[in-house]
Image (cartoon, helix red, strand yellow):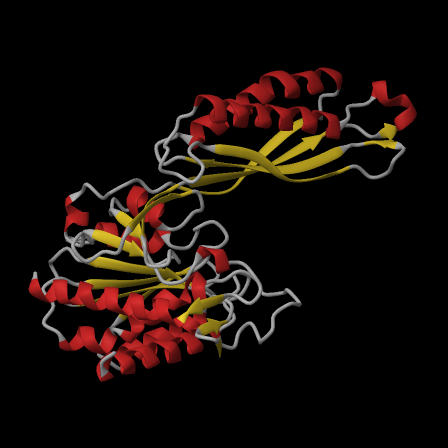
Length: 392
């Protein structure tokens, strides 16, 4: 490795340590990290635009390096991380620790490693004669449903020259993911009537009606598995649907008055999840809810959307992808987990791929780590992307 590349690697690791030190668990503010990045970019003469949430305690950051009026490349990473409450952490979760060629810390792989690499490239980007811009996009609340990035994507889409391509730096071992499923998550409340369980026929059992609705969800899941739609490039080649949590009842001798459950559909990019949900709700209301109300007017079902995000389609045949085709790593396929790629594509009309350092196998686990060799590979990719932008 050359002296300059070694220096950049050390810079990326140092930056990663600083990013990991911010406890940006989704329940917390991310402003400490965002302000750190804003100030770091300002040292290189780069202005940042912040998009705050309604509370003012979280923000997206958008910064552009390079010329205006030309379609560029968005380099996107989320700043929030999942909790690190496990007791099996060997070293402090929010303190980057190196062991055996690996960097341990919450968010090291998912996905502050990518952001650190992009920031480490800033000194190189500002001194090169770029012919296209790079848009650094850092978001909040990806881990709780990709609910933060939308305001920034809307801004990018409204630009006179929106980005031609977005690279979402989720951990993929630096292989390109060219498709991801979307997700639609719902909460359902079921209100019955309470009473002594010995008079069960006189009451409306909320748990029993919830279980019948859950069975309809399971039937829909089996229908997807048997009849599709299918895309064999996905790790699970069809949409999935399942109940994820349930609670209800008060005592063993009381007919349950209330039950609550959540369910989700993880859907192929072109599978209309909203239509599936609407059809399921209609079936439940026309049958189960009507049956309950025939017995007691103030009973029935209520539905509340928790969150949703769209799937990401395959853009590898698009002009946007041809710009980077000769420098991208291996294309490894499509994944069933989510990312902000679908938001960039569907909401912003910006073709997207997922490619970043680290392994998704390390995400959301105690002792999360990223291999230093993955940081090196990501820096090499970003350097090749920079060279492409100069030579374009």
